[in-house]
Amino acid sequence: MKINYKNQFFLNWLLLLPFGLWPDKETKFTYLQATLFCCLMMSSIIFQLSRLFTAECSFDLIVRILSSTTFFATLTVPTILFWIHSKTMKYLLYKVEHMYDELHDRNEITICEKYRYIARRFTIIVVILLMCAMTFATVLLYWPFAFDILIPKNESYTIRTMEIVSKFFVVSKKYYFLVMVHLCSAASAGVIVLSAIGTMLISHFMHACGMFEIASYRIEQAMAVELLHIFNIRNEIIIYRKIICAIDIQRQAMEFTTFIVTNIETSIFFSTITTVLCISFNLFRIFQIESFRDQIEEALAHLSVVTVVLGLMFLTNTIGQEVTDHSNNVYVITYSVLWYLAPLRIQKLILFVLQRSNKIFILNVGGLFSASLECFATLISASISYFTFMYSMQ
Image (cartoon, rainbow, N blue to C red; front, top):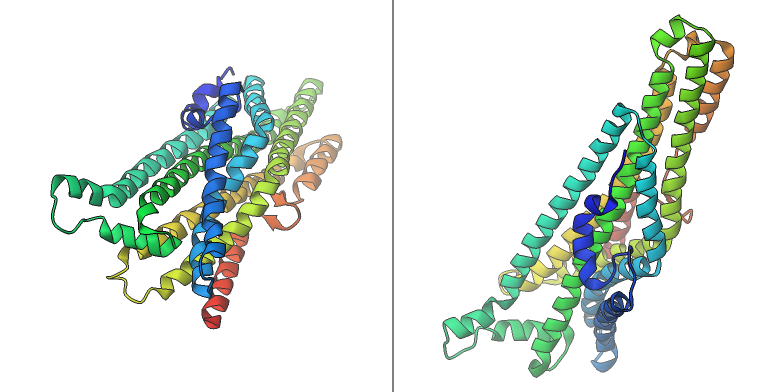
């Protein structure tokens, strides 16, 4: 089965190319693009943290600044580490293409196409949601400037926006527009790049799910009734080959996912910390708002951040749970086939598959986190605990 990874990851290529982060081809120009992007993201974090040293420090100011800084850190850390590991990401693209090329069975190709379609559809949905969210945010932020031009009046429409930015980041009102443009540019670029990177990695994990599904299919075909009822040397060789092929693709799927997790575990580790803190700080800020009617803009901003980070955390753990479930399904299928009708030599080979598949395969990050719905619940619980602690200390 011949595929071109550029067709599979076209939207990811479209989103990453303007920032010089597409891993396929690296030139001096793309290096300059990526460097400027990383400088933009890092400068947004440094600027916000600098407010803690230039203004009168208080608990309220610390929480206010960290509620924003942790969100920008969540956007920055994965993107910078993705750039650092660009050669690894390039290898993964060619690895997926090579694995597809090894498939010749029509049903196996259909299974792969199903998971490719799921990954592509998910990417399209994320891009559409991203475009809608950015359009809404742009209109919300810049409508006062448009109104000042189209419907001028004695008092500027931008005064409200000016006061919010100046108060939140403790800057002079004459610099608020530069601050807003800087942070909005960094947030927009970070969200775009993180969406592209996230959907690309999800596509890789969906490919691994497809490989586990093919392993289950090969086990079923090896233990087909027609091969077991008319057992001869020819059928025995066919069964051996099919089981060996099933074991081989299961091994490839495990090695593939383990390789991905090993190379991005640093990013996952820091992202997990920043997302938990981000949720806690932003929840705390929401509950500090005295009047939602008077501070609707700030409330919406914090609520949007919590929603985005929760969605990111949920998707990360859900895809990990999917990989684990597909791996466990190999064990279930192997146990369910008519292995007891096979000769003793083949039963021993099936027992080998059962012993390997009986060990739960999880995406473990440095022995600290395992991507699963249980981990998602644990992280939410930790965020709520930190929020409760801060709320009780005020």
